[in-house]
Image 1 (cartoon, rainbow, N blue to C red):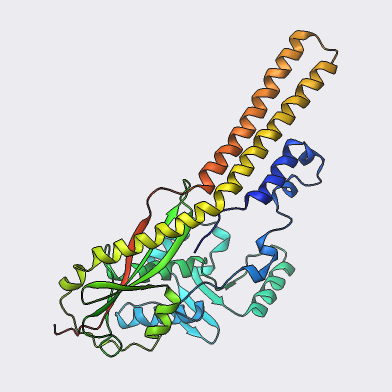
Image 2: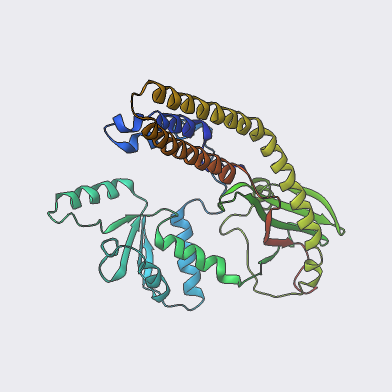
Amino acid sequence: MIEKEAEPDSLWVQFEAMMDDQVQESESPLDSFIPQSGRANHPESISPLPRVFPSGLEYARTALRWFAEKGEKLDGGVEGETVYLTAPGDLRQRLNYLPREVRPEHDHFTLTTNKESIHAEIRRTRQEEDAAWPQLHYLWPLHPVMEWLSDRALNAFGRHTAPVLRLTGRLAGDEHIILTHGGFPNRRGHVLVQQWTAVRIQGGEVVETMNWETLQDRLDLRPGTLPNPGRTGSTAPLRALLPRAIAASRDKLRALKRAFDAERRPILEQHRQRLAELKRQHEGQLRLELERSGQPEAVKARREQERQTHIDRIFRDYQGWLENTQSTEAEPYLQIAAVFTGTPASQ
């Protein structure tokens, strides 16, 4: 999967307009920073993200049920399309960093996936004189409650550990699949190139690599399809396979990065050339203005120095933006997400 922090084409138009002082003529200065076109206007170019759970509601339902099975006492539950939760201590600590008005009374959250209910709640709050914050929140992945649930689930296995799923009916006794996730971030930490890779190892050798969608279909990895007998087994033989899986995943990521760099290299070079040409145009315009000016030479020299410093800073900042956002690090990060094995727990 390849992601871009921002499209240089759309930002180039905004940058050029800014240098032409069009921003000062706009009714709103923000207009020059809002793309008028882009991938957001073309839904057909946006593919759905791979997921295990069919919806955030099902994820929340499963997470709360899992907490209950562990014996954690939470004041929460799911009714229909609505999730109820009174924030426990660790979630309240996160809420301390949010504006006070977004926190409901007694930190009792009500989230729903029903958009009509959300619209009705917004209309209700707009009619109130104090313009109160809606008490009904939309259930989406970036809501603080959902982020808290996700972090709690991710930390369930501890640091530097991954779950082992023993699928004796779906994999052969010497067949193992190691699921990894990795990518190449840019200098700002945003991951431009990332990929889920499932490495199938049989007889101690890597025989296949596949993406998440293929793995999910092959093993039917969906909620409620995998029994959990709760038996533990030795993981030493599986740990011995990790270096081979990591090497195979790293090769896949490097190939993806080479394709990304090959695609982006001519585009970035074109932008650098356009940037240099635009800078020359503005420097030429500056010299022409000064030649036509009837001001004393000392005043023109000061103006030239000030404007040239401004031009250099603007173009240097944009060049830095290109380098920091459109180039990736040399080495990827990699983590083991899960291990699937056909070896039973008794071995």
